[in-house]
Length: 406
Ligand code: SAH
Ligand code: TMP
Ligand code: ZN
Image 1 (tube, rainbow, N blue to C red):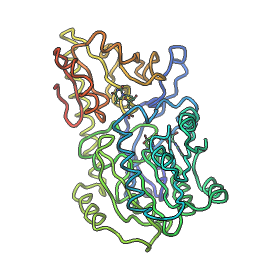
Image 2 (cartoon, helix red, strand yellow):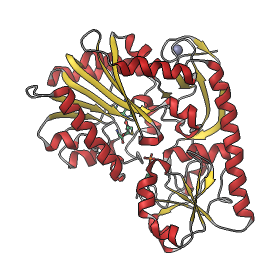
Image 3 (cartoon, helix red, strand yellow):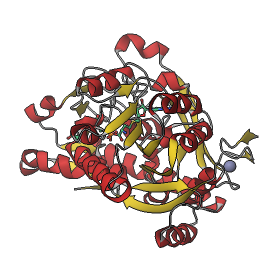
Image 4 (cartoon, rainbow, N blue to C red):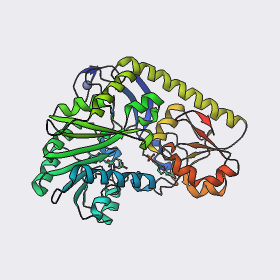
C-alpha cells in the first residue's frame, strides 16, 4: 500500500504506463547506457480526489542547469501570459500602492516580463539555472531556488508579503505540494490573491490525453482536489477559468478563507466534475481502457504507413511526446527523426525511444509524407507556419483530439 501525497490515505495504483525516462531528458549517444528510468504508475486517492504519480524522480534530476524547456519558444504562450498578467493587474491589483508579485516556475521570464516592463515590483523563483539566467538577462528579478515554506519566510523577511502569487504549469510539478501551499499562506497578504493554472484532469479524462502524465506532472488537478488541498491551510477557491493552453488547462483563483466573494463558477464546475465522474474510482478504470485503446489505434495507423514504405517525422519534441513514444513503443523504425526548434534538444536523442532530434530546417529541406503532430497544443501556430508542407501534399497524423490523418 502506498500513501497519498496530500492526505496520507492508502491507495492502490490503477494503472502502470511501464518504464519511463525523464520526459525532458534529451541525451547524447554516450549516455544511453546510464539513462534513468522509473515505473510510471498512477493512482487516484478516493479520499482527497487527487490524481497522482506513485513514483517520483528526485527533483534535481528534472530541474537543473540543463533544463530543456524554454517557455519563450511559443509566441502564443507569450501572448497568453501577457493576458494573464493584465488580468491579475486589472482585476486583483487595481490601484494598490507598490504591489509585489511573486511567481514560481518563472522559467525564462515569459510571464514576469510583463510586470517588469511596467516597473512593477516582482520576484521570480526558478530552480533551473539555465532558464533563470535568460530571465535575468531580460532584467527580471529571479532567484535560483526551489520554492517551499522556508523560502517563503525568507522572501517575506526581505521583501514583505506579496499582493499576488502566480504560477503556470508548475504547481502540478511539485510532490511536496503541502509545503508550497503552506508557503503561499505565509507569503500572501490577507487581501492578496493566488492565481495559477495547470493541465486539467477533466480534459485528460474526457479526451484520453494520457500524455499529460509524465515525471514532472506529479499531480493532475481538478477543482475537487484543489479545494481539498487549499482548505488544509485555510485558503479557499474563489473562482476558476478554463483555458485552452496545453491541451486544456484550468486556472484557479484562491484567497484567504472568508475574505473574498466566491464565484458561482466554482459550484457549477464542481457539479460538472461530478457528472464527468472525476470524483469516482470507476472513471479511472475506464480511463485505463481508453489509454490502451488509444495506443492500439495510433500504432495501427503508424504501422500501416510504414508498411507502404512512406516516411514519418515527429513534429516537436514535446515533454508529452515522451509518454506517447515510450508507452506506445514508437521507435526509430517508425519515425525517421523528430524536428524541434529548441537548440538544446537538437542533435540529441529523444528520452527512452532514442529517436534523433533535428532542427526544424531539416524538415523544411526535405518534407516527409507524414508528420506525427506531437506539438498538438501549439497546432494553430504550427499549421500557420507549415502551409508549404500541407500544400505539397504532406499529411498530419494526430492523436488528440482524435486519432486521424488530416
Ligand atoms: N511557467 C512556465 C514554465 C513551466 S515549466 C510556463 O508555463 O511556461 C515548470 C518550471 O517550474 C520549470 O522551469 C522548473 O524549473 C520550475 N520548478 C520546478 N519546481 C519548482 C519549485 N519548487 N519552485 C519553483 N519553480 C519550480
Ligand atoms: P511544450 O508542448 O512542452 O510546450 O513544448 C513545445 C515544444 O515544441 C518545444 O520543444 C518547441 C517545439 N516547437 C516546435 O518545434 N515548433 C513550433 O512551431 C512550436 C510552437 C514548438
Ligand atoms: Zn488523498
